[in-house]
Amino acid sequence: MVALRKGWSIMPRRYCWPLFPLLLLLLALVPAIQAQSHGRIVTPQGEFNSLTEALNLAESGDTIEVYGGVYDEPLLLDKSVNLVGYDWPVIDGGGRGTVVKLVAPDISLRGFVIRNSGDSLAEENSGIAVEAPGAVLESNRLEDTLFGIYLREAAGSTIRDNTITSKDLPVPRRGDPIRVWYSNDVLIEDNVVNKGRDVVLWYSERLTVRNNEVSEGRYGLHFMYCDDATIENNLLTNNSVGTFLMYSRRLHLFGNTIAHNRGPSGFGVGLKDMDDAIIENNLFLDNRIGAHLDNSPREVNSIGRFAGNVFAFNDVGVNLMPSVRHNQFVSNSFVDNEEQVGIDGGGGRSQDNVWTIDGQGNYWSDYVGYDGDADGLGDVPYKAERLFENLMDQNSSLRLFLYSPAEQAVDFAARAIPFVKPQPKMMDEVPLMEPVMPEDLPAVPEASQQPMWLISLGMLLLAVFILSLATIKRSKTKERGLRLLNRQMNSDLGSTISQ
Image 1 (cartoon, rainbow, N blue to C red):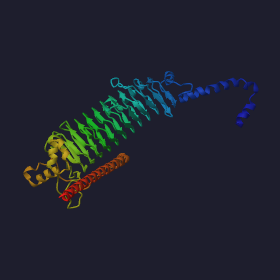
Image 2: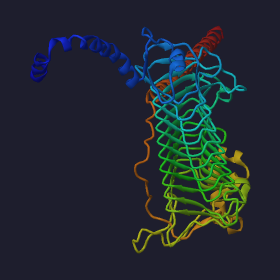
Image 3: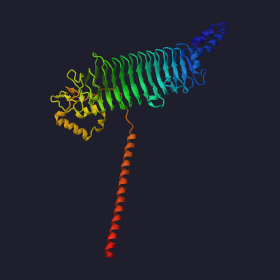
Image 4: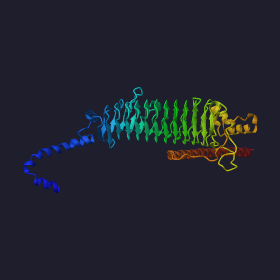
């Protein structure tokens, strides 16, 4: 500053005065320079209060900063811009059509509330529809949308850290909260999806789906024709089906928690015509069926590998169609499933499926063998040969009698009379003596205790009410009996006096 003053004092004044207009011009250009460097700013009360107006004036590569407020204008993004929301600006679709549509490549959309799409399944009304590659959809909230995020031929896109809830409609009428169609190399991570229909991933290769939470829908994840996908560390709970893998090769499902999926199918994971799938280190908890295999693998030179999984407290741990072959099961833990392994239709033995590999099998909570040499491996094979289980596989309605005296009588007869004892469905030559629990799995949300307290209290009140009715009835019956007895005694006494 001193040097500036010194220079100013040395400079002749006749040269200084012409510099003032230039200085004023530079000062006037500062806001424009700042706007050019930081992009356009949209606020409800600012120079730009319309997203559409700002987009019309923007050029590819620009950043548009949008501040809180409600913008009642569906958007068409046809330039490669970056839209960044602050204080959760709302883009409202007004209940018609798709709210935001991206048709240019390499668009990013962050920090918005996107709500109120149309409700036409035929038109596939969506919160965000992407029809170009390289989109980044991050940290948005989608509310009251039919389809949530829909990628169509949008290779290399990223869907990260979004919260998606669908319209309050019957499940079949809802759209898919996330749908990926003909879009390779897509990353889907850290999203929370609740009360949608299906997270659909079809006709796409090299997908990565990780660290997502999907609950209260129909299919948590539904893959078809998706080779080389990775599905890791997701939490899939309270859906009709946790995840269904179909018509694909080399899918890797590992480190997921798949729990409480109890719809009509109720699969934790279903595999249909899958080749070289790897299912490892997952927790399948309290599903109707932990893993269901149908024609998987389909090719004779392919295998399916199940390793290090925990199947716990399911109605059926692993369920096989009779023709299923070439699967390997090793180091899995089968813990207190009502039926550890089932074969649909009473197909007899699990043929050409391997339950012991390189001298190591699986853990079975109902194993009654022993470990004489304390090496952690059972000294006698584990066999699934309960007659009642075989009967249930042939006729599922018999499950009504599970844990009943009828079940116990049937199994006792099978043990006592070898003539009716069935052939083992499967045999594990070297079962493990201790279960193996995978580490770092997504935690199962704790169920609210309030409903259980209410149910318990209701049952207690009902019991008290029934006991009270019984007590009142007994009291009234006793009183009526005493009156009749007194009347009879008085009648007998009168007859005796008259005689």
